[in-house]
Image 1 (spheres, rainbow, N blue to C red):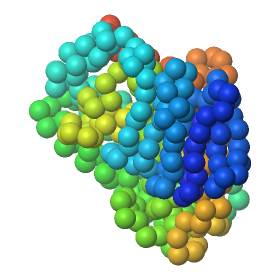
Image 2 (tube, helix red, strand yellow):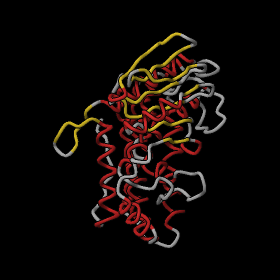
Image 3 (cartoon, rainbow, N blue to C red):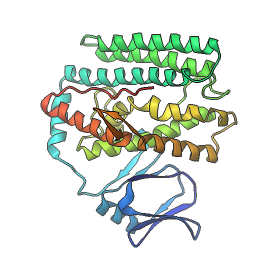
Length: 327
């Protein structure tokens, strides 16, 4: 199953004989059978989509995402894709307890910091100066210590502020190291979200947009409510659970892909050619098998299984373990 990402202005998406047809002007550029498609993600404005295609996507269970940030995504899906309502009921009941929310949030933050550490060590093993290797090793120790603080953090009334404080210290060290090592290009000086002007941050934001649609798809497949999370604030239009679950995968799936393209991030903005390469790298990572419970399973399938594990936690209080990548 493929994730189709449309990232250029002026494209049009239509339907011909149960196939998605992507056109530029009046000329078809690609045709893909709908049975091979999992999601369609439209990352740019100025893309037209036919109503026939949307109806066919509903029949095939294909979700259509429009937007490039989790908070601004539009998700179109068929009315048959409701999964089990009981899963949502269990989720709301479980997360109504502040202490239970803490348990889930702690797991997400622990997984995020551990995977930031793994990403640093992944590039640390490659050829670089002795000074950079020593610096990376020290950062890995810092992240290791912070992740243990999260793991051992007891529940208190102000748990959210304490967890976010630790996460903030880890993030500051992580992004500072990437800047000092120029692993995100020469112009990267720090993390910027909306309105980023440098190509590295534009690439990160673009990659997180792709990841958010994949996570959203997995959560709705599991029958969970994307707007009811444990860590991020619950606000209208904010898919809190999508943002929560993304924390585990940001560093390994997106940051690592952007770092691999660092030699192409020294211009004034993210180039279309680099955006295409980044899309390909992220989708390749999602399709690559990883070790999971003694078997080799595609990462995208592992993400789906992790969402089902959340269902088990909400329903039967089964333990949820974040996915920790190996370098």
